[in-house]
Image (cartoon, rainbow, N blue to C red; front, side):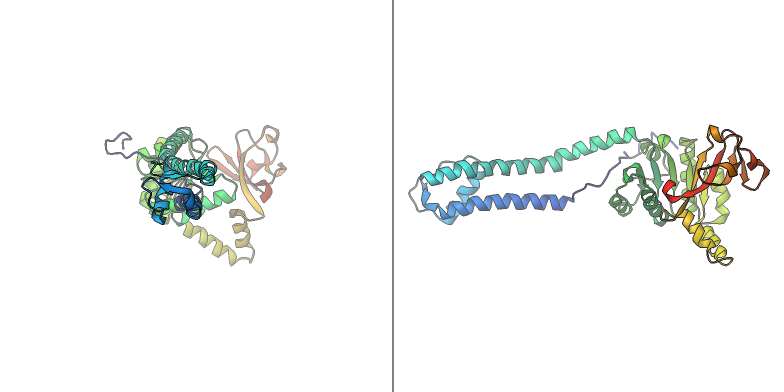
Length: 342
């Protein structure tokens, strides 16, 4: 696969605006109409202060015409104020109204023309500087829940980049505050545009095992060191996903089966497992590197939490095994900590 194909689309990030377009337009239109209504009402009640050059009586249509022309321009001189009261009103009320209306028009033009250009440029700059973000490919059931869980665990929604080819899915992701990009995550260009090489992690949940595995292959080739987690629905494909480069392979059906089976051996087993996995639980699993002060101590001697497992290179040791009696430099440990520290 090549990232410079001639038919490769231009992938751009986008974020949801804080104010809906229809609401912004409605407020501006109502404000402009209200200002015009004030000028029209006063001109009508003080119509004796206006005179036409033709000498004809001033009608409501003349007042409407005079108001619109005076507010939007400086007038044509065919209808003029002749009394001091009418002239003072045009000076101190109509002139500020004219300025406000023009500011509303210019602001609307800025928001819906210039601002779009500015926003596109701003997102391009953000895209170039993306770093330490989480890429979520696929915003289905598992992907959307992963994004919500990341936010519940304290992640800034704007540091989560969702890639999907469904406009509806991206709208839902935008509503959560995530940065989104429409595209096919199996393509090099899409993952490169999301700056996968500087990402903190990649979550793959494409809905189909073959698509998910292809995304993992593409992601691993572009970013050899980025942690990749993938949802696989068929147990037969779990080994293939690992071979493709996934660090973590999660099978929702298998995990649900573990919870169900565990519940038959005790009423609280499944509850504790769910407690560990959910953001709202009392405890959390945390993975971290062994500190210099902990080297040489047993896993049971750490003070930050309850040590469960040691990852030493490609080997894995439980807390009951002899290797857990002495921690070594570069070990990764998994511990259970209170949620406030997770």
